[in-house]
Length: 255
Image (cartoon, rainbow, N blue to C red; front, side, top):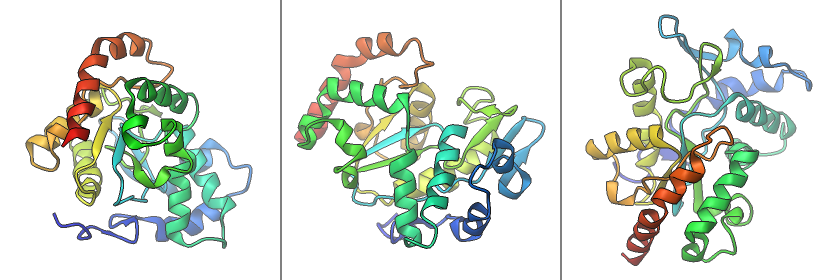
């Protein structure tokens, strides 16, 4: 896939923002969860699998990124943050600027971002990137990072945030289709970035895509734990894989 084939002006070619922008801006300032987890924002549903996929404007793609940080799917918290960002920027910025602000404000927002930064700094990624801390990736150095998810839009299983495990992400037709139409398309627009998968389920998807030649397995920082505060095993996982990940970073940045 050639650079530029699938992405134009930083907006993914699969973007639905022009359709949903007015619906988001029509929401009251104090909107409820039920207002956004509603039929008007529903993209797809699989009743048998108890899955629902809703729209959220996570469609900005940084083609010049050196680092890509990949989660499973935006959760309800990130979805709400993205809607609020759009509402607050109404009639002020271009669509591209709005979608860029959504990514900066909403990606891995909260305690997850704090844990992510702590682990990346411990690995020394900021030194390779020439910044003071990976905190800068969410501030003045945001131009060198692309944050995304293997499932672009918020997925809910039985009404709760989908965690990538139940149902199996690669054995569920609806989910696999969304991976191939979304993430697999956008990653091809970025030139050989360092890819950081957050947790084993993301790593599983990236390994599958590497096997399909959508990305290079040598560029994936395998072993990185999911930074969620709910992942009680993250400290142990990080400690067990730290040396291996540091070696991978050294090799990647020595190329």
